[in-house]
Length: 243
Image (cartoon, helix red, strand yellow):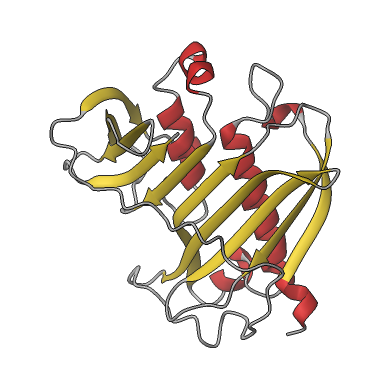
């Protein structure tokens, strides 16, 4: 593949559907923008959802770190760029930047894997993922957070029943909707007071339509709080560190 195809950029307007009650892009809005352009780029290099479906494969994301420097207002004209890093054996990295007039507003670092539809086991990247060492920027040198899955004595902050509108092409709870459901455990006033600038999101187990998940939280030395989502068996399916 040509080196230029390892990145993808476009201009985009901040639409009302991306924004919250303050008319700024919401946290789920940032994640939706990232997923949308990731999909466009993946399709352009032959590894989009429809292309991989023909091979019996689908994408999952295992880790996402979102850093917010500034939240743009509705109708702002923005530039977004996504690029891929060299793949490892069964995982790959995709990064994303949102900017305005040369100023970085938000940044995402993410880790993805391919699963086989027949048995939901990881597929090897070799022969599927672009074999190139070109990137427009190296990975962020801040490592993903080690979030313990021990939430036995954590505070219950809410429950969410997964509905049909939450399901993505992989047939499971869309990763962005974990964040919507998590933030829905707080009021607008509480979210405003938290003034969230960074989230480290980690996806451990797939959840499906009809399941009810429980959100619990605990204090953290390095973050404002850590949150876990537990499925009906009490297993941790999602964790988040927030500050």
